[in-house]
Image (tube, rainbow, N blue to C red):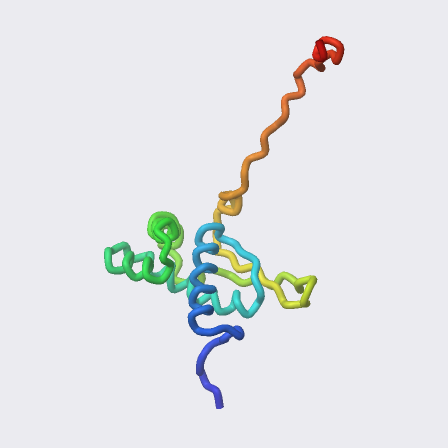
Length: 147
């Protein structure tokens, strides 16, 4: 019997798996919602919940613990400054996994993992703002421009 043994190895070496989850944790903290495969999302959920729980106790030891896990100063700051305050009254369940159909190429099951009560503006952090073109410009006469 396999009672409570192990976790999903996701066909990766241990170092590759650690790097994968570190990058996914940083992305989830930054954007507060990411799309990935269902097994990866199910493995990521307990990890993000533990990260936020560590962040709720604001002391130097916990900051060092989170920095060793995330290795990104901006993610650590966001966990301590924003997320810990947002979830101060909540005792757990900071994230949710929603099934999102199947991927087109290989038919892998997709899932959306997001933080509960997320900031919707967080997804737009890296997207450049659209610049409107000026439509009030007068057309240049070709005869005048060529002389």
